[in-house]
Image (cartoon, rainbow over all chains, first blue to last red; front, side):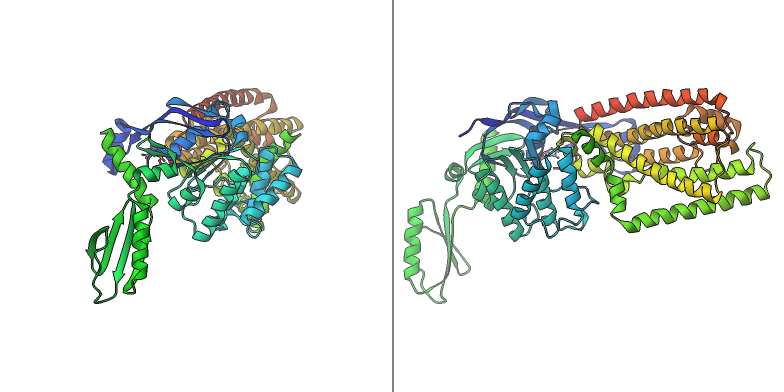
Length: 329
Length: 268
Ligand SMILES: Nc1ncnc2c1ncn2[C@@H]1O[C@H](COP(=O)(O)OP(=O)(O)O)[C@@H](O)[C@H]1O
Ligand SMILES: [Mg+2]
């Protein structure tokens, strides 16, 4: 693996603000004696990302993922700790930092709202001072990968979410940054576009060697793209390691659901944990036992329906949060 | 060279936005035409009905009023419509992208405003030429007045820029500045003399106004144009303009520095 290109070293971010009290009287009171509130969005987050690696930053809503990304990308100044991107503290020289990184925050666009996307691209070309020839080549490639040309003359306000985010991905890569931050890029997309974007992200690490930090709630995406995950909860890292290890450590094992034909006598097979309605649930942790059970069931001709589940990543995540919460209390 | 290209590209955004929407462009032109015609009719009728007590002749008053109408255009296209103000970006969270580009937000904001005002100026200049040809606006009172008109108009544009920029940048902290913005808009029209020439207001109002930044964008240049302020007396007005420019520029610089340090982004 390459050298560390992104480092979070004890990052912390505290937001200070004033709470609004409800009603007119409340508004008046808030004006006279504002009630101070502080939110610890990120408590203590440390991890490193190596060149060419794709790291998935996971966690429940409000865990502090976006705030962490904003500190690493140099938008926010950390309250404590340090961010390093390619060896530099990103917020100290934002213009230089901007040339090294690209970013997409899925819920908001960087495109100019009332200009055709192509005009926004040209704007970014000049803002980043990209050579015309290099720009042409890159735009061609990006447009091919993301199929932009059918709608890039439209304004973002006329685009579907999927079209808009694809333009935003292209916009973030026009200056060819080696490091990319993607904060929920696929949120709200339909399956087809999601798949296209995933393939695009995979291509950017695998073929282009870019270093990527990705946040998402889509576990299929994680297992498809990331070899390493960092889980954060309440502003702290609760897991940092490979996806496979995570599943091994916290996996809840396999499940098999079977419905037998009406009137059939269900056999006494190992692993039966319960019966609800006409459905029998088998579960276990040893994959060999699952294979054995499936073979047995497939040989029978009174099995009407059969569903086998592996480890559901969603369940794994939930298990991690539960266990970590128990051990830290 | 690329520096210049970058600046020009950012500056022309609003103009491009309007030019790409011919309907909007035509609408803006038609609106301006109607406004000018109505203003012209109104002030002529007013002077025919009531003998003036402002010390302005009919020609002076009509020229002033029509020029003041051009001022609406001079402020440039409304960046609110294009969704590219600090307020809108802070509100939606897309302000993050301003900090992910090799152009500082301060420079970007300034270039956008400069472009907007230059575009507005082009509009105003063309309309001025048309109005002069049609006789809706009289010639400048004197060559000296014309030169000082140009100078004070330019300085007034800086004052205007700093005022509007400060209110916009304040959104990093206030988020909702509709109230402040509305007050400033009204004040900068009223005290600028865009609604009614300041010469028609009582003395105490003019005294207050003469120390505020607003009148330097419009009232002062127009008064020099029509000859209501003599070129020899322009020094005091120029001084007030320059003092305001320095003060507001410092305030804006300070505001940006604070914003860059403690930028807050809404939402996850
Ligand atoms: N600008 C802000 N002001 C106050 N609190 C904030 C701000 N931004 C985020 N937070 C709070 O910080 C916590 C973490 O937010 P965020 O990083 O957006 O989480 P995630 O992206 O993991 O959902 C949340 O409780 C959120 O409400
Ligand atoms: Mg988030």
